Length: 234
Image 1 (tube, rainbow, N blue to C red):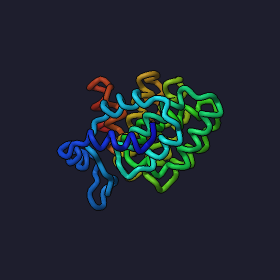
Image 2 (spheres, rainbow, N blue to C red):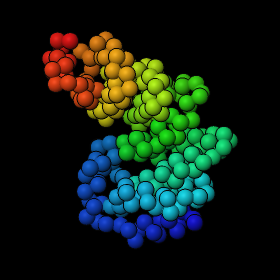
Image 3 (cartoon, helix red, strand yellow):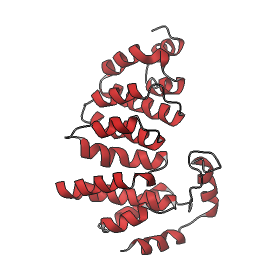
Image 4 (cartoon, one colour):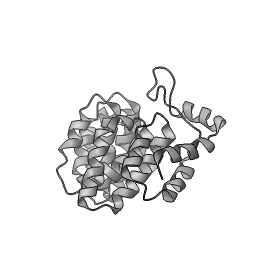
């Protein structure tokens, strides 16, 4: 199966009405974060199913899809790369991670980041130094910053919270709501596994957190405690 054959299949699945909705949802208008992105109108469940059908496609062909201007082709490419990554040996994993970083400009919307950062970047760095994530967290590129915090989801699942907290601290003053949501979400995931660790971090920083970040972080708290944080009375 080649990338061109996959593209022909996706064109047949296109839905103009859904594409219009997705262009609005992913903010593709002038000056918005997804400006100019092209959508076919194919849902994620369909793309996930296709990734199983095309399981085993050469990584080189998946990379051609990742470099596409069409959003759904990039989503499918990431599903395929994740499947390839999970089956690869150490050298194969290193190759996919390196290709991901080389083509990081194609990971240019929040759904692409959220799908791939934990499962490729975070997975690769589980037993390695985490310095690349701290460099990303300080980048001017919003998607690199989101990759930095979302990659730590892989560590959180191993009850390793240090880098989530460290990168969250760097991003406390970020000016983009997509980072506020991402950091709050990861802090909430820490709290699911160790409430004490999350609260220790929050008590130090919650008063200067963007409101959206705080709301996401405390979403699962009991109502009384949640209101104390929102009122600044903890």
